[in-house]
Each structure stands twice: as structure tokens, then as C-alpha cells.
Length: 472
Ligand code: B12
Image 1: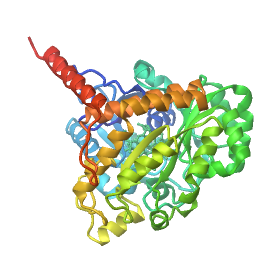
Image 2: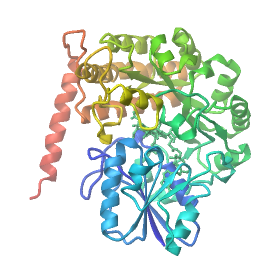
Image 3: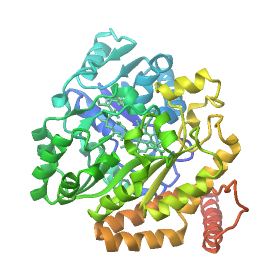
């Protein structure tokens, strides 16, 4: 059979016929979900991948089966895609986070849903399609060991590889032992962490270039395993980034090993400065009192820190934005991913918000962490949106990016500095493109001259592009 695997993109990011691929190389990482499903596909089938972030989707493609992966914010687009292909008589299959956490909903739009991991399930789905016995839902065994995880078929991304920062995404393990109430990973993997056989990972690493990304949810999920992995990686002289809990800072030996193994940047879920908030989401292990010391330890080890911060938790009032910005500056955070508290499906957080009637927007398309979909406790929804936008915009001011990059160069070295520069510019680019300005609810608006100039240049660029794309 001919199988097309699709990663949908939200409307403002989607590449359509004739439109240019937006310049956001740093944030685009290869589609590991789909290259993995492709690798699980028996050789008799022909597989292609379409990532709507970098290429237009041809709904008239000559294919038999269409597999779509999607997170919650992409559900509306995934359902549109399913409708188009089903109308053309193709068999459609859904997989990934949203179909797993909202299986019945996804089953209403697709011919079949794979809930959970594809290993051990996907070949059966294909066999059933061929045999005419396709079921609605296929559920993977959540406890299976990860020796069945294949080496992803990265070659399928060859024609679009230039649009990604790297197509070399590697996973050493899945899930996380923590049980943070807002986290989809906890819901998906039932707060359990499993590691792949170390030798499988090392073999895969030997086959890829120097720079890559570990897409683990917590690269030190099993500290003993991480120690072995890092030791074995030292002679490989790789350079990589990953995600990790702040607990790495409490283990100087592990931290040093990570750096010697080539780690140059970590995404760390700091989430909030408030102990009350941390306790409410069951992330007390973060211990906000030690943030500055722990972040300093990670940066001193030569590893840049991207902070994941959440605003809009119940202990937050309108002062949270300015306090958070001050903290990020004081902690010398290298990059920021800011989230507005979003009750994702399947999480205990959602259950509580639904129960209390505090979910005010049920359009999944807005569940991208950039929209306010809740009624916050300590401010209005408009203040939360404004303040979050303001904080994002302020953090990515051009002068701050320049200082940040220079600092990263001096403290973490050239690889980290290049990463910081590109990552910061990508977020700044996204903020400009999405016209994110915002307003600090506790202060009168004050704009930076550089930002005003950048906005003007941006508007001129937009006009020029529109003029150029206008039909003669
Ligand atoms: C790497 C990553 C990214 C990367 C790359 C994303 C990409 N396009 O590939 C970047 C940094 C860009 C990113 C961005 C975002 N991400 Co992200 N990301 C991840 C992360 C850590 C790993 C994804 C991955 O590669 N997994 C490895 C693959 C192999 O696992 P998998 O996807 O689960 O696939 C398996 C099964 O699900 C199944 N499967 C999956 N798809 C399909 C399809 C078919 C047809 C079949 C049969 C089976 C199948 O089979 C696979 C093999 O078993 C996940 C967390 C996680 N554990 O997965 C979060 C995660 C997916 N991201 C998430 C979010 C929210 C975002 C952002 C919105 C964050 C933000 N604030 O901006 C953005 C959105 C960007 C966008 N528009 O696409 C959430 C999604 C939550 C939800 N309920 O939808 C997750 C779960 C993180 C979390 N803790 O909540 N992300």
C-alpha cells in the first residue's frame, strides 16, 4: 500500500502551494513520531511524510492510507485533513498525544485510532486494513519494554531537511516519573519512565552527525542510566540539547558528565516562582528557593538554560509578569518558553478546571499555550493574556538578546552562544509574526525604541511580500 504520514500545522504556520516556508529553522526539529511510525512499517509498503510546517499537503495524493499525528492544538486541522481524505475514499488513521488522550473524539473523525505507542500495533493496523478487518481503536500495551523502538527513517525527510535545525532527534527513554498535574506526558505514560536498551541508543548515535537533539521528556529520568549513557558518549564528541528536570543541578557529577558528553543546552521546567503554585501542581521537588543557585550551577557547567515558565496559576496575580521577568534576567536564563496555564485533556488539572466551571474556551486550536482558555483566580483573563504577551515580548527585546548571546559566549562557549542567538531570534520572529505586544497590567505602557523600529521594518517587509505575491 501507499502510505502518507502527515504532521498538520496550524493555519498561520501552514505552508500552502505558492507560499514561502517561514524562516524559523531553529525551532523546527524533525518529526520523530512519523519517522518512527515509518520505521515500523513493513517494507512491502511505500511511505512518504508530509510536514505541513515546511511543505504543502496534496489532498489528492495517490495514496491508500493516511496516518496523522497530532497534539491537542492541531486537532482541528487534523480533523479537516481526515475529512478531505475520507471524502476521497482513503483510509485514515490517527495517532499521537491528542488521539490517545481523547480517543473517542478522534475516532469520530478517523477510520481508526492508535492510542499510545505504535510499536507492536501499527503493523497490525496495516494488516487489518489489507484484510478488511480494521477496528476503530488499537491500544498499545503501556508496559512494553523499549527494545522494540526502531531507528527512525530520517531519510524520508531528505527533501525537506534544510528547513529543520536538525533531523536528528533521538529518544533514550519515554515518560517521566513525576506526576505534575498539568502535564500531558504524565497522562500519556501514566507517570512512568522507561529507558531504551543503552546499546540501541549508542548504536543509533554512532550513525548520526555531531549535532543532534535528545527529545526525552527528562534526560535524567533514570539518573543511573543517564550516567552510563553520558560516560559512553564522551569519546563520541557529540553536541546536543535536551530537556531535563532542575534536579540535575543537585548532582554535580551528573552535570559534569552531561557537559563532557556534549550537552550544551537544557530545557528546564521551572514553571513558577511560587511555592504555593508548585505545591498545587505537585511539582514541589522544584523548590523555588534554590532556583538561582541551581540555574547558576547548570550554567557554570557550560550548559545553557531555556526556562519553561507558566503564568496564570491560582497563586498568580497581576504582579507575576514583572516578577518573572526580573527573575529570568537575574538568573541569566538563556531562552524562555512561556506558557499560559492550559488544562490539556487527560490531565488532573483539566478535571479540576472543568469541575469548577473555569474552562472558558473549548476550541482545541487555542490549546497552544499562547491563548487564555481558563478563568484565572488572581486576575482577569484579559490581564493574563496581556501580561503573558508583554512578558514574552520583553524577554525577547533585541538588546536583551544581544547581551544574552554575549554572556552565553563568555560563560558557556561558542556552541551554546550560537544556539542562544538562533533560539532567541526564532522566538522573537514568532512574536513579531504573531503581532504579540501585550501590556504589563501593573505598569503604564513604555516601548523600547529598538522594538518600535523593528515593528516598522516588519510592517514594510510584510507590505513588500504582499506586493510581490500579488498576481500580475
Ligand atoms: C520534541 C517535542 C517538540 C519539538 C518538536 C515537535 C515536532 N514537531 O516533532 C518542539 C520543540 C518544536 C515542540 C513544540 C511544541 N510542543 Co512539543 N513535544 C516534543 C516532545 C518532547 C517529544 C516529541 C517526540 O518526538 N516524541 C517521540 C515520538 C516517537 O513519540 P510520540 O510522538 O508519542 O509518537 C509515538 C506514539 O504517540 C505514536 N504515534 C504518534 N503519532 C502517530 C501517528 C500515527 C499514524 C500512528 C499510527 C502512531 C502515532 O507512535 C509513536 C511511536 O510509538 C513531546 C513530548 C513527548 N514525550 O512526546 C512534546 C509535546 C508533544 N509537545 C507539546 C506541546 C504543547 C508543544 C508546543 C505547543 C509547546 C509550546 N508552548 O510552544 C509546541 C507546538 C509546536 C507545533 N506547532 O508543532 C505537548 C503536547 C500536549 C498535548 N496534549 O497536545 C507535549 C506532549 C509535551 C508536554 N509535556 O505536554 N515540541
